[in-house]
Image (cartoon, rainbow, N blue to C red; front, side, top):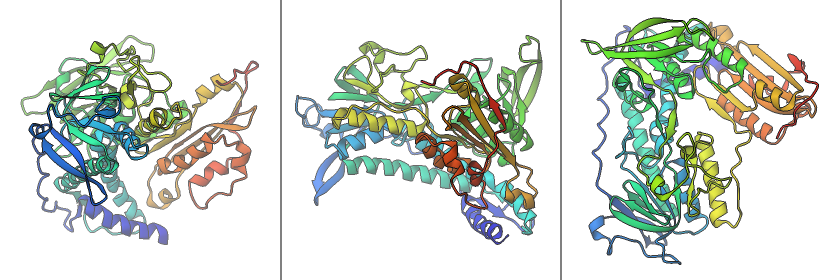
Length: 559
């Protein structure tokens, strides 16, 4: 009880800093000044390096001040750089920093001017994850969690003295200030590693030349790390949809919002806006959200989403979106009456926004790839070999633009492997096996390894362990939320091949389990581990009896 109460005190201080206000009368407190508008895009800049006091110092000069055509001093072989990267997101920055800072290569990188909303002319060092993806999304998740925390606090005896209200303008201002700070940090990271940063849009000219806003640079190797862009499905009025970039910049919390999609981004934003108090409608074509995840996890998560107040619309396809005279939107959709049925029922929802969170597509537009003959996949991604090399030997690609596994830590891993291959004398393939991941919906989901369906197909003989319970905090708070945990074991070897969790702190817990699964932990080894009590995590080392044992006469051997 002391632990829970002291944590609530700490949460109270944190929520005040995040923009939440407690008004004794229940009325809204005065709002802070609105977030400053993003600065206009700057002209092409070159960030060059000159030694200063024993270390590299950053200097900015205009294109007109550069020598000749603005090219840097050539490296061996007549190239300006050993490596030049198009795109300063997570993968591009990591590859550039390590190539220059660790291996001493001469490296250049280009990126468009900073803006919280990406376009063909704007981006910013840090890329999607840092500036308009994982990081600001997680800040939104934190802000949305306080509403439930306030309710839980009352269950522990705390008297809040009125209904807490959220100063949305204050929160947005702090969020945008943090993004500006992170953008500057990424520039400094490149600077401190000795990477030359050129601001502008990069485009391939030939196998060793990149044009950046009219300036041409040459490199022995070129890396494409331009990420992905949001995809909006075509239907009547789809141009009225917003995407995740815009959702992170809404000037007020919507009263009603429709979220299209059933993947990571869709369920995360559905949870965010529901937590902020919006009426949320989640619309998706399948019978359950989160296609590709373990079926039992999908079912449990959907139940929890509905319990948290999200209106779920499975088997539903958008039909029309129109603007009403009062500026609001009317969204019309058709819901199939059954999984295999062709019959459908049409319904309409009036709302403030329709967020299209229906996936992302590799960002390959206007990069000169087709002209150079770089081979593309059917999905429009850059086709690479096991070492991230394209069909043009001097051109490489990592991250979402390759559509292998669209996760920021995977892009970082691919970038590290690339630098070893190019500069470390250690040809290294990115390892995409047993990558842990999390969905920051409400509740969170953490997973690593195979789903039950995948494991059964791969191994034939599997043991499945599951546990569902009400977290200790919820027993007193009155919160109805539950946790679900699952282990999948290859019965013939006792190796844990899948680990899944739905509930509070899933991401934190699954990072540790991710290490165990990656190292090939066995069920016997988990059983021999002493749990931390009281915690939810201990359940992973105390599940003794299998929920079910599935067997096949002819088991397939996993690749």
